[in-house]
Amino acid sequence: MYLANPGNLIQALDAATGDLLWEYRRQFPTARGRGRPNRNISIYEDKIILNTADANIVALDAYTGEVVWEADVADPDKGFHYTGGALVADGKVISGMAGCMRFWDDGCFITAHDANTGRELWRTSTVARPGEPGGDTWGDLPMLFRGGGDAWITGTYDADLGLTFWGVAQAKPWAQVSRRTDGDALYTSSTLALDPDTGEMRWFYQHHPGESHDMDEVFERILVDVDGRPSVFTMGKLGILWQLDRQTGEFINATDLGYQNIVDIDSATGQLSFRPNMIPELNEALDFCPSHSGVKSWRAMSYSPETEAFYIPLTLNCTSTVYSDVEWREGGGGNGMVGRKNFLHPDSGGNLGEFVAMHVSGEILWSHRQRTPYISASLTTAGGLAFVGTYDRDAYAYDVSTGEQLWKTRLPTSVQGFPVTYEVDGRQYVAIGAGIGGGSWVSMPARAYA
Image 1 (cartoon, helix red, strand yellow):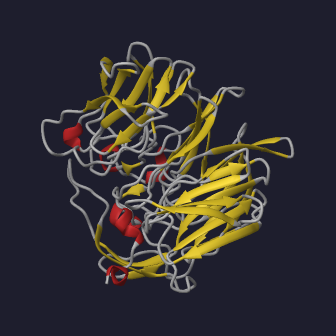
Image 2 (image 1 turned 120 degrees about the horizontal axis):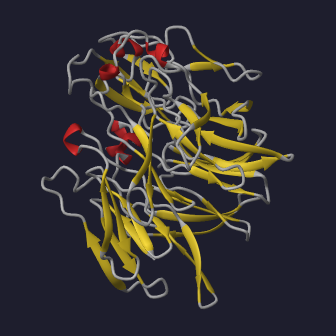
């Protein structure tokens, strides 16, 4: 078993006993990357692939932890870094860059590297450039001032279609008024379907044109065939479950959980429109739901073929946020937020956490609420179980069909990792990482600390 720890510490454990076999500790010239989250690593043949906090990709020998190759992808002095791991598809290490907060000509991008040598094979921009298709959706802004488009969650691969699917985060600065354009800002807040061999964009679907509240649509893409139709599902911070045709990108369906008050959605077309008085103005506090952590956040939902349902950890809170202007120069920019205060969602009943079973059609099968948030990813198994963890140290097992709590166990600290299940010598185990960090505090309103 291989563990990804903050600060790019990788550990190999005996999966039956937990004994430490080896560890790799990334050395940083400054303190910049030491506490940065590392959401996952990848395994390919006899290699462990690590995307680093200083914008490198490192391949480690799975048996010894020795470095096999290393690729320098971007300049960490400009803020570029990785928080999500690579997707390995047909011998290609495909990675989405993050840290695209500041104004640089580089822009954000997705790359592919040869899994055996580390050689870069292609690089695809996640921001439409001036003069290219979609470039006019940023108005007349030069490339220097087209911020955002981070691809900070690992994509998904369909080997039969020969496509890899990636979510792209919001434009930056976050608010339209701060970035000085009300255009759609392609390809932010979108799903991209890329050819893994060439990086060619086969299709894109922009979920939220001109997004203005940090409600990005970057999270996991789950591949499910519904009534024989190959589909890709995702849910972003707004808590809207999207279903697209994964061959063409055609919109199929969208279901709003009902916890956001920022946009209206046309269920026939999938088009979003801002509700009245919901577009931020400079230096004026705006109350909206959800908070910047989202109804749904980076903790992945899971899918059960048995119930045809997704199992989704949610957070029920809102925010009062102030946006301002940013410095319009090379290296300037940023998110434009200058003030934020979270508060409980008015429909929460005093509960921050909800765990929902949602059918692919959008029907809610069952749900559980509790005072503290569910902050781990969820895991479903062929045995009809759903696993999830919480801020207050509990790991739960539920029946996927009924939602009955089968057991829970109290761990030493908050349960924030991604649960996995595996077998050693005929015995099945469930493992889950415990420990808090990576911005989880944004789920909590101030008075919850009292």
